[in-house]
Structures are given as C-alpha cells and as structure tokens.
Length: 303
Image (cartoon, rainbow, N blue to C red):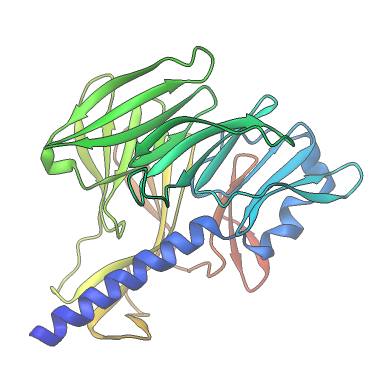
C-alpha cells in the first residue's frame, strides 16, 4: 500500500511538471499554422488565455518562448525577441504588454507572481502588483488572487482606470484551487492535476463542479493533457491511467478506456459531450474561433 502511495505521488508531480512545461514552452509545431499569411488580419485577443502562449494583433504574432517574448511581422517575415524576461503569461493591449513573472528574490514572497506593464519594444517595464498567487488576463482587466488566512481573495485590476479592488472572497474549502479562465461572468478554477474543474459565477455567486470523469476502480485516474476555452465552451483532453501500473517513467495509459479523448463542456448548462476519442499528442489550441488539435505534425480542425 505504501508503494502505491509513493507511485501516486510521483505521478502527480510528473503530471504537474508536464502541465506547467506545456504552458510556458512554445510548441514549434505551431509555426506553420500561426505564421500563415492570412492570419495577419486576425485579432486573437479575445481568445488569448494562459494556455495559449501566442497572440495575433496589429499584423504581428507574439509568441512566448523559454527565453522571452518574440514578435513576428507578417508583412516582412522577420522575427525578433522584444522582451528578455521569462514570464508565466502575457497580454498585448494597445501598445503595451502586461505580463506575470515568478518572484525569485528574498525581498518578495518566493514563488509568487508579480504583474508588470511596459511598452512593446522598450525596456521600461514597471511592476503594478506583487505577491499574487495566480493571474488571468482579459482584454480590459486582469484577475489575480491572494491567500489570506482561510480565504482566497480574488481582485480585479482594471486596465483603463488602473483601479484594483476585491471582487470576491472564497472560503477555505476552495483556497487551494487555481484560476484557469474567465468566461463572461464565470471564473473557472481547477485542481492542480485538473482532474476536477469548477465554475464560480461572479453575478449569482454560485459555485459548482463542471467537469470530472467518474471511473470504476480507485486505482484509475483521469490524466489531463490539455485544456482550452472557446466562447462559453470548455475543452478538456485527457487519458485514463492506472496508478498500480504506472512508474517513474510516467503514467500507464488504459488505451481502450471509453473516457479517453476530448470533452466539450457547456459552461452555462454544465452539459458535456465526448467529441473525440483520439488524443492530440501535440496539444489542443484555439485560433480564429476554431479548435485545432496537433498530432504527428498534422493539424486537425476539431470544431
């Protein structure tokens, strides 16, 4: 039994590491899709989220890589690094870039985030807010959270007015969950391993679970490999794994499990649909109001 717990703990760490790596590393397989000339007219600001490390706006593609932020100009085909900082997430609004970065010094709370703002192409970034747990961007505001004793306080930072205020305080039973998206009036939260996903409606103050996969057998778990949002739909990709057969090399996938694949969840009605039993190993992405999957270098329209 002790061995099972150890293996489960190792698997959890590996899942979390793979998830985080997928968030911050630019997938080179996306280049041929993102750099198509016809994309130059797009504005993907409404689609931008922390699991999409790119944004197209004003004829430029901004892509987040391990060593900084790059700008690709569709007209001349040139690409240059415009920001050296390694970041967690970013959003281009007008001629400014807003981004979050992990604290790594003794003055600030270690491993917490800070929110910065600067002009594109200029080395003039200024810290707006520090010591935050989690941050998600919208075209007109940023939401960030801070833990205080037994509460998780969620703040709204208005981009235009620079006003910052608490919009909700959540109870201690939700304190360890992480904000993932903001969809209309809903803040989407997830467990660290994304096995369960929740929604909090800021208008009605309703809280509820919107995604989990019930499985037969306590040794089975749903391993999430990707998540995206489009309009009021949430898309979750994952595979069912067996903890008793998994090891340090990774989770053991139950390949014939009927729950494997991609699920589509309506945020408003909470209804879900199993739209694909296939796994896109290269990830799932949103571009121009379409859901794409990448597998073996090929793009599949999943919408």
